[in-house]
Image (tube, rainbow, N blue to C red; front, side, top):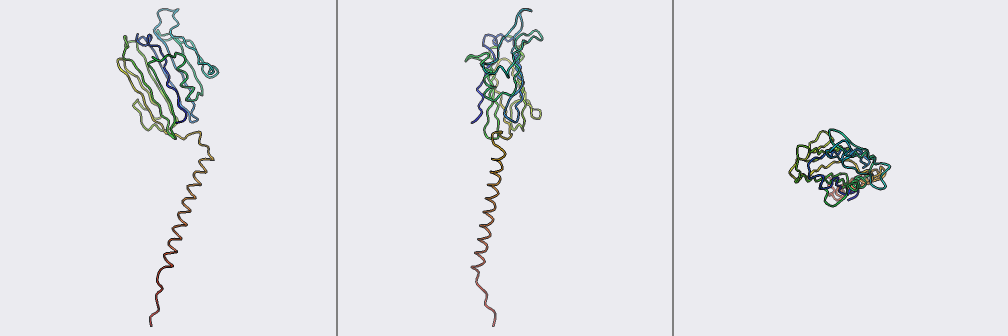
Length: 220
């Protein structure tokens, strides 16, 4: 499969386990297989000087990923604004908080005319669910054919609950941008040529059958 986005995590286990956490993912997948949106990574601030979760853009993506300080509703951390990332680059956002024990993982990949979104959110060890605010929202440029999230037209959202592991999934159908108009036209012409050849063969078969019919002799 082409365009696999490496699964990415956003938070260290020590922060996630407290439950005093806000993670908000809002991303729009475009018809050219790029992703634009924002990710908020924050924890409850101890005081006005507490910067919360501070992360930076992955190396090489600074031009399209902007890290801004975030402070709202008593949470402090970082807002990552990203623009026109490929599926693979979207996956690289996991590097900002790295580590093999991350408990939020998301992935985008393409298979022909289908784009598959999958995710896993592990909130088993959340200690303070009343301060937990985790939400994932994805919008797509085509028809959502299946999902386990809340769907509104071409947008799907999830709000994973505390105390369990939640799997996120959505399958979307839209044209592969790597297939050029010329390729599509050639495929169409090839299909039409096949139809023409089949029609010619059928006509030839009918003509052959007619030639084999016995000629009726005139009555005396």
